[in-house]
Length: 343
Length: 172
Image (cartoon, rainbow over all chains, first blue to last red; front, side):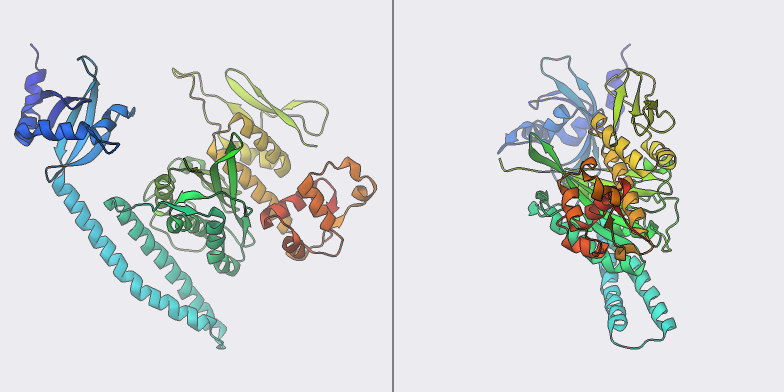
């Protein structure tokens, strides 16, 4: 006896077998109950190419990953659609898809994310005020007792750390809510690296660390967000500063990868002479909430989101990222971005 | 000059070194890259454990020989992004060691007696030649960085290379 049809009809998720051109070859009861007779219409739309853009159904046919899942809004509800399997038995190739209504979950996530973003935003205002005041006192031509100067510098360091934690949480909430978009503007990579180095030069000098550039001026442009790329490089340098001892060295470089004599990719490296990362931690270092077991030399922990955010930024630019580390010698973060040429 | 070659076999790849002495030695104790046993997919090659290999090589062979071997390994692993990072770590170590000179940026490099009497022996490239032309025994590293057309890191790296090859000395 073939139990499969009965089993499929008892599943709570809507399941349909759909061909590339949008024909429904099979539908279970949940599918009928959820979508009724309107399904044929929106599936046809999902299959159609509009203004050169293929609908979401196309992705399930071209993506070779075993697992493919995507959120799609259908008639005012959000469904998570998972590909269960490919079906090549009929006349046209088809896919078996499972539809789960995740509208409430997504709304809850959005509300949580909005709340976090609002709180973080509200925290940044007063903290900026504290930072500005500390900077003014420390830079003003006042003869501070060395003990008070030390205490104020400590307060300044901690406020910088708090600002960095707040910014990480804000970025993370943007990533989670899907509001993490990358502008498409030409980026002068050399300028970005120079700005990032300059912005942390005083922190490096204070901690007696050499922070130097390792790139020329002739670095090709890439396309993306100047602000986000700068933020990624600053995050990496800040991370290096936490783990590099006095008299250590942090270098920020850019190299050009060529293909057929034309620039094909830019490889940015941020390398330090810090304590390094344990080999077994190298595989998971880019995961969220993951922190190195190595203790920071400058005190305090982080959110464990810094490298995760940098990786999201790099991937949003079509790039990839890797890490190299030798315990007791140093660590290098390697970012590769494609050089897009005008068509 | 530093030289070495990459030898491949079906089951493993060993970076061999022909540095210094006349006998070609296998550096199985430093850069010895073992593949995992052949699996169902022969296209997927095991990634070397660069972290351990580089750490061991730095201890046993020093920075310059490790650098040369890694640079050569890039030909065998052109798509390995982490390998770029390991090269940068070694370059960083070389520059940091140069900056660890007691006088730091105020150290004054001088052309070596050997270079003055036998400069043909030193096969300098254009960048090295240009920096050598700036070294007059009076300019310190700080001033050389200002005069150099190259970025600070690469300027110091070239100075360190010239020092390693005995073209210049940096008196204490």
